[in-house]
Length: 344
Ligand code: TLP
Image (cartoon, rainbow, N blue to C red; front, side, top):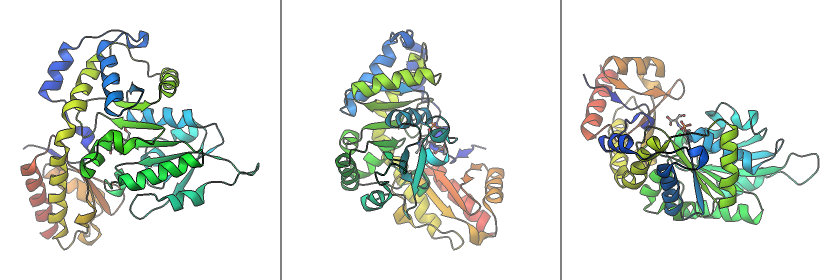
């Protein structure tokens, strides 16, 4: 039985082309800046995002942490959305390592608006901790892959700049956002002070994320990466897969989005499942199973027995992601399995 793994797009295995590139990669010691494949990947990332420089980091979490720490001083505040990844799934690194206080804003759809952010900026009074950074997430993972438009993004970035508050993008899935909007990633992210994006999610690389920004920022980020234990040696073997992810995989993300839409539309037609298919804009779907009489652990366990992997994000909501290693037929099979489970 083929296992259909819808737990995340992080589960994708390197493609045959990636494995071949990995085995042929030219490598050197990247701590000495001598790995030609890493240097090439960083150069291409900077070009694609139209930035001065880029840095390869092992994970999205490390990339976000480096950026949060570089933009802030301990004791300052960071504004972000309540369900953001940085706040909820990075082991409190922003508090523990950067020493900053999250100022979380709840939203219904995951997409912050400037007027909400403006109200959360702390007054410049000596006894208030000061707002040092704003973080956005596009697409927004736990808001079901919600996509923030270019207009909304620009408004927030330009207002933040006017207030002299730096702004960071957790763009783990920014290529998905760009695919939905029909924009280039460079245009969509132009006004952020720093951007982190992942090669290892929808783009299919086995490992790795990238930070892009100014030359000065990336030089500081390199020092912090070393401090955190992320100075890697012959890491060109990973960068080689990353290059294929960066150059070739963005073009196919629409396929994942259309599979997610297909699943969402079909799930919405099942009485005991609640999801608004209109809200599914990229490769993530979150749906409510309260009416099935099962909690998400039970639902996951029953799906697993039938060869489908998916996890809950709480007791009542399941999350599924489409990606390179599941095709339309797999989605049809997953759907049939869910129907059988829920209706019988
Ligand atoms: N997301 C993972 C889990 O950690 C939840 C997933 O399966 O979706 N930003 C965003 C928006 C992310 O979704 C993730 C990972 C990260 C950052 C962190 O990336 P890694 O796992 O490389 O540290």
